[in-house]
Image (cartoon, rainbow, N blue to C red; front, side, top):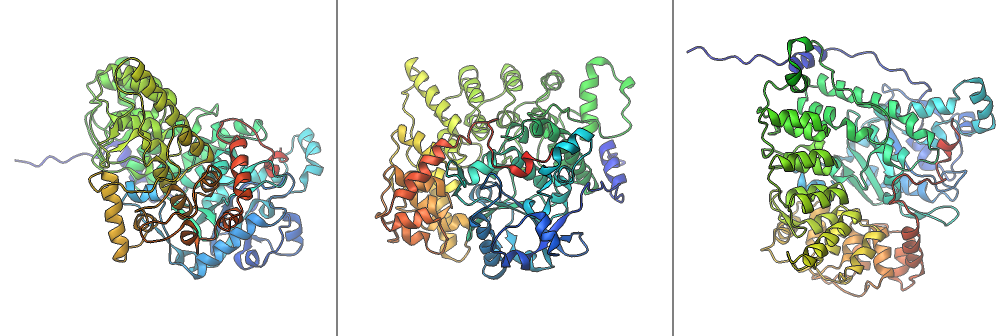
Amino acid sequence: MPCHVRRPTPLEEHSKSLQNSTGDAEPMLFPMYTVPVSAILSMTTLEPHEALKLQGLLVQFDKTMGKALFVSHQWVGKRHPDPDFIQFSVLQDALRHLMSEVQYIELDVRTEVALPSAKPFATAELKSAPLFVWYDYFSCPQLEHLVSHKLVESGLMSDLAKAVNSIPLYVAQCSFFFALCPVIESEDHSKLLGPQSWASRGWCRIERCCRELSPEGSWVLIRSAKQMELICSPLATPGSGSPGEGQFTVEEDRQRLGPILLKTLQRKLRFLLQSGDLVGYRVLLNHQPLFLRGFHVPAMYDLVPGFDADAFKDGALTVSKFLYNNGFSKVTEVDQVGWTPLHYAGCRGDPDLVRALLAQRANPNVKAAKDNVMAGALPKWRVMTSVAACRHHEVARILIEAKAELSGTQLVGACIGNDPEGIRLLCEVGGVSPHAADHEGGYGVLAINLACMYGATAALEELVAQAVRGSASGMRQGSIDVSHAFWLAACFGNCSAELVDTLLDLRADVNEQFHLSVRHPVGLLVKVMALKHRFGKQTHFSRMSFHAKGATPLMQAVMGGQYEAAAALIARGARLDLRNSHGYTVADLAKGRSPPVFLVQAFAGQLAGCLRVASLALGSGYGEEGETEENDVMIEVHF
């Protein structure tokens, strides 16, 4: 019998046609000024672009010269990024540490556990070629506010505006991206800056998204000079959210940035096609609404040429066009990671498209075969899990009506998205218990614990409310099990002062010492990782697992660089004298990690600094989307 030869899809043919094409490079509106790393390490003060240009320290970068590092950060002062040189000195010490003392930047804990295909970053890359640093204060003009109003009145764009509009191209030129996020106070001592506040800022989110959409993709979160981690999945991004939903000092920036982000998305889509990564292409193509949420910019889906709309009847047009642009030949097809067309349609969140696919008998209960790093999706994820994580509520209702199977895994998706409305929908309409666990993900973690692991305070509060509501209706006792919740939150990241307060209000034990049985999936995982550490395979999580037995939330927070949470725990009565099973106190575990001054003082019995940090963290308001601050002066004056 003759063998059936599968014909390539139009998407595959289009991808192949682009593989030898470089495309037209988009020109930068303003040169990419950088400073050699040797000059960075010798700085004792920060001077603006104009001053460094006069001194001859600025270098117009191109890739033939070496490699570039983009530094994303918040401004500490209203008129200067770092008046006391506190934040920048952390960058200097971190660079020295990376270029002389360590071989790898380890993965963050959640990525290490959930996505085994992810790899750590070899620091030899930083030394493989001359290194140049992009930092806004000396890479972009800073003194144009003296003439900016005249430029606006004349309809001209200032050099600062040109530089800011070129930021996505600067990021794309950089081999490395560091988010500089030590926990420090603002210049006027009114706000706390750190990973949580950095992740809430609209401009920082734009920079982060530009990096995630660049060919390199991964980036480094610097918590202190010796505490940093590699982020290579949306699963791990602290306070992950759409740039358009972030905080902007100048509200007009929110809408000006929409078209810029859309162009960045299109560049990444072209790159994925050129490299033949069709799974990554499908993920990004259909996640456009998530990236563009908060901007009034329509996504673009029809990127594969040659579709003949006249060949289809109205009822089949929507599905046919979707299959064509996503490289599928039929509704029931699965790709290399086991995702179906409905998986990708669920990420897009288009109710009409999902209804049309279901009408053609798309199965909402297919489980993914593998993890999908770009989507931040674990093996066995169903369509509803991604829908819940993306906060597509109308699509979730459609899937519930279509009798999609629901479990704690979908509830976990809503927790990852920190989505109270999604949790209400799953519990009240879908009948999922707020006490459910993620058994499909492989670890059997309760939804309540996943919310803590992702720092999802709003999701945590809604789960509690659902449990109480269920108790009132006689469904189940309303108490929520918060045992080990503190430890998991501190271990897996994103533990804020707000989350500490919420857990204490739920009567979690601030000094609970970890003794989880190996019969529990998390307990078994910790035991296995501790053994790996003992026998030489040392990673961020293996180190924390080795010290886990008898460890308090405070110990885990300090080991994980959760310094805001550590201050909040101390402020709320965490003991400093307790020891883990190896006999270490929290001060012992902090050695060699360069913790902030307020923690060093606390270890010596001086708690005032931690009390102040905890108070500032609770009053900073960075958890609320859309609020504004005044410390992004570079952006504040550029239009």
